[in-house]
Image (cartoon, rainbow, N blue to C red; front, side):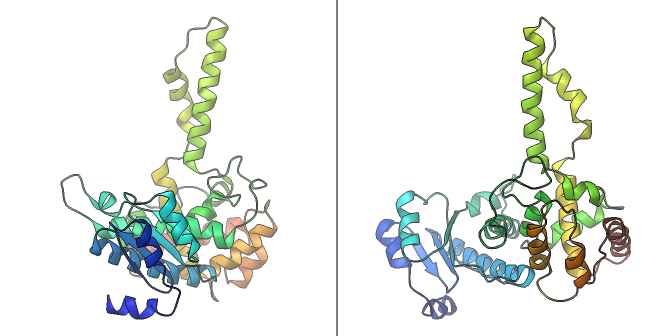
Amino acid sequence: MIAFAIVAQLSVSVCPAALAVRSDLGCDETSSAVAVSADLEVRRQILRTIEAASARFESAWGTRPSRGAVVDSSGVNGALSAALRSQGVAWVFPWPLLEVARNADGTTDLTRATSAMAHEIGHLLFARHVWTAPSGGGLATRQYATSAPDWLDEVAAASLEFDDRLAADSLARAHRAAIPLRTFFSMSHPAIARDSLVAAIHAEVARRRASGESVSTMQLDMRSQGGLTDLATFYRQVRLFTRFVESNACGTAPWGSLAAALSHEPKVLWPADAARELCLPSEVDALNERFEAWIATRRRDPRP
């Protein structure tokens, strides 16, 4: 905590304002992070996670994130958020760290919970610092969080994860790219695709029943899911592709360069010029081939 206090002197102290609103909580801060929780260890974990996520984001995306706060979600409210923002905190994110860390058997896994926190912060920082374009215009029919391609938005989150078990599991389950990159680059996030499918099924059931046909939602649902990509497969591919690019790109901040190029060419699957400058294949098919070769090599020797 001494180190945190020393760093905090370099920026405006926001904890007094937070504690004036919620005196029942505790608050710690650094020059780039604020943690609010009644639990001292939770605050320490939050600060470490934000600091690590910020460093990873700057390295991968080329932008130093603005100062933000994570609040134990049991303590967050409008007045607390307003107090933090009034002191220059750019973003406030509620996160139930201990709840997420709790396993079914009663044990806790703080590595998983803090890595998941970093994942969600990645989405937030991507929207705030990288892809600020208004919604619409992407290749996917519906966007997950921003108007960026859904795979890129999810890469922003995966690039901040530090639970190595996730990448190891993705590699262990991969034989080759589970989703061809041409499909991967243009698809909607499976969560969005599933929601769209459910809405369409309910509309079709209502239409058929109105015309006197006997049909159930389950009947149509069973027939329609064959083309859906399941979430686990999508996330595994995101994690593998994230590691692939970071392992093979030359230069610095590869994702920042790729995102900047894609933001100027929203109808392009893969930015050829930016990829070439990063020593990556400029054509999607060649990229897919190299990606699959990398997976095969890593499966034989999974060391970083």
